[in-house]
Image 1: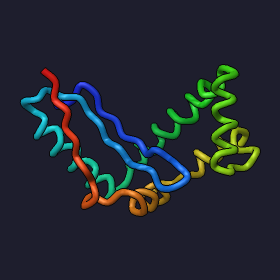
Image 2 (image 1 turned 30 degrees about the horizontal axis):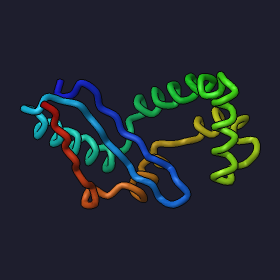
Image 3 (image 1 turned 180 degrees about the vertical axis):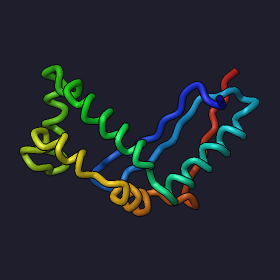
Length: 128
């Protein structure tokens, strides 16, 4: 109930990119919303996703994958990613299979390598 929207993502780059959490909320509850966001992230870093969360995430990623390839532009964007990151040429063919292989332990390990609570920077933008 604190946020109109909330999201998080990694921005992959050739060198380590940022992990970002964003939300929109009322100015009066911004402090509480930020506190809850930090607590949720801290719990996720400690425990990782539940089995149900992991299953739902995999279904969403695999289920929406065809929409990432439904135009020439999107196909070209994916080919560019393959070239930029030096991914295997069968990356798109094996995408769903590779998503299914990801475990909760893999996710916890990735977050442990890339997200440090002590390094987080908070930016608040308030409108009128």
